[in-house]
Length: 436
Ligand SMILES: *Cc1c(COP(=O)(O)O)cnc(C)c1O
Image (cartoon, rainbow, N blue to C red; front, side, top):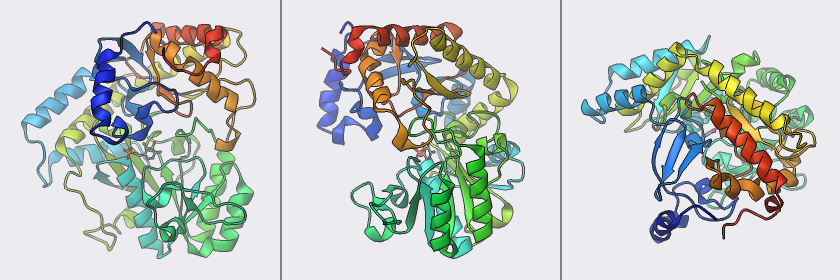
């Protein structure tokens, strides 16, 4: 290992005595790739610098919010200005109206937005609205989708003939897990048979229309259209969880790209420009089920926080005024082409705009989590630390997507492609990514 990591390691040694596993969110723990986490000291544009002074081109970008890159000057200025005017009011303010207008301007037919502090909260709220307006208890999710750490969403398919979910985390009451039905992605029949059995009790179906938390499992638009149809037929709501995809691929949601309109959409990440945020949007009649107008309770001391909203407003304004989506698309295409022309058959990526999944296998691209190739995962692990040594910081898991930002350059995506290909070719890539 040629990079110095002693300061990160010292910090990690202290962290593990203070914080469970040394991290405040489990995927940061480097369990998938071996070794211990880098401690980041600062970040600007496409680059992050760690505690030892190593600089990396960052393709994790905080897992999705930073479509403009780190510390975009106009976003930082907006945050500083807001902070000087008070960190939180617990009362109404102008930025709530401004961000609401900006968000809704991206979604035709959506009339109301409620802001909160995380994507998890947004999902929790959307599910509660669905149950409140339908008076039903069950919700359906898909294996391989991630919807934050809401109790009822930390559920996987039961074994054998069991159709109700079983908890995928300790600490979830069985009664809660049993209110979630789990279906397979890309499988109309599975959904149909669940609806046949439980349709009258299903409050909502929730799906990432572009599942991006277990690799990138691009769905057939027909499948999503089928969900729209069957939820209408049974009087259930369709919820698109667009916490990652919202404003990431265009000014609005992925649903519009495929021409399918859900009843509720959850947002987060990009709309906060790197600050904590979440949102639920929907038509007025559905959203007005929320308190104080309706009977569905939802609240938050820091909801609509002025500093978060300042970052979100600045970000969305720049998405309108700058050619962000064109640039990240062309960077993504360039990256893909460079991998392709290497001639290494498994140097491949699955990509929608700036969401890029390295899928290091030459077989068919998966549409479900259980068809992800083990070899692809092993190859990723095998080159992870080599990529770091070459100066590229990626999310530390083969199941996570890379994010290209407006701050990246052609040279940087080309460099990453070159590094991937070279390390795949070298024999070293056969060992698992352990340092030393
Ligand atoms: C990130 C994410 C969430 C959770 O958002 P947090 O802000 O981390 O709570 C929910 N759904 C999807 C699709 C996400 O990608």
